[in-house]
Amino acid sequence: MYDWNALWHVHDKHRGGYRTPDADINQLADELQGKLLKSARDEHDLAVYDTGDDYTLLRHDNGLQMLRVAKHHLFDIGVRLVTADEGQALALPYLEVLVDNLATGEEAVWRGEVHCNDEGALSVNGETLRLDMPPRMQFDLPFKDEARFAAALQEAWQDAAEHTTLDAAAWFNAEALEHAPEEAPLDARIQQMCDRYAEIIRREQALLSRRFSDAELHLVAEVLRGVHFESAESCRGLWLAVEARVLHDELDHKYKVDGEALLEKLRALGYTQEVALIEALSPVQH
Image (cartoon, rainbow, N blue to C red; front, top):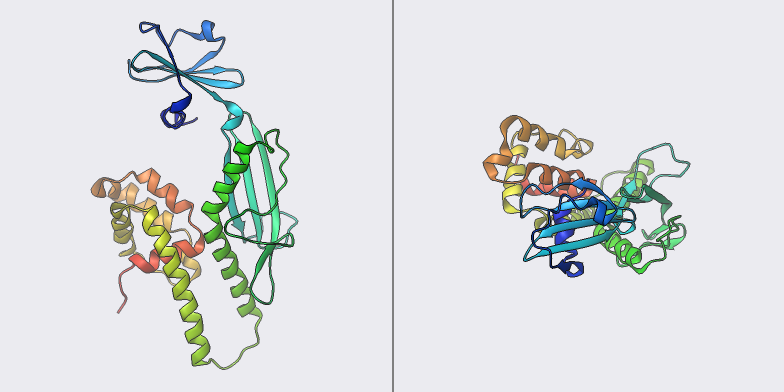
């Protein structure tokens, strides 16, 4: 359900200590008025209880340590640009922000149509898109006005803003080219497009180099040596090719990486990020 060990370490400043060193932390349901969700397997493991509005985590660590985590704080925020019809009454592309709390069952979605003016500036619902600040959004959630939620939304937006806006710009550029009247190719125009493409790829590669370890990049490079992309559209879904090699050839063991974690990173990539990774790691074709 959750990575309890991660929660234990993230909230380490909120733990409390108790003088009951011999207490069996798997037998405290009555005292805590809760239900045991996860039992401790040994003296160093965590026991987790559902105690109503909180999860209570217990562990023997220089005495009995206890941590209460409010369920309504355990929300996830996902930001994505939707460029294919998913049945919504919105013009493509549109921005979608999903807030989901698995613990409480609370969920809310905000969507806004993205537009591009003649100067190439992007906006959503009439508001210029900025990399440093999310657009105004309305969520029907009980914690929507809390500072913790505002900070998490800001962080989620800043993590996603650059590749989201690059994907949106790429979508509008492709749309404009598709409807533009045919004209004789001009060397200067082609060079301009190549320069812009190279700059987009350079920026994405700089970000990706910090997201992936060297071992993960070597693994992806080996996969790409056996893959040929016939068209620009075929570059989407790089994680599928990596997953196949991980399953069949156990490349994660060969390169000593966490295969599932790598696949999660690849699934989260936008189109321009996938292209940037392919450009960086694919062998030169002669």
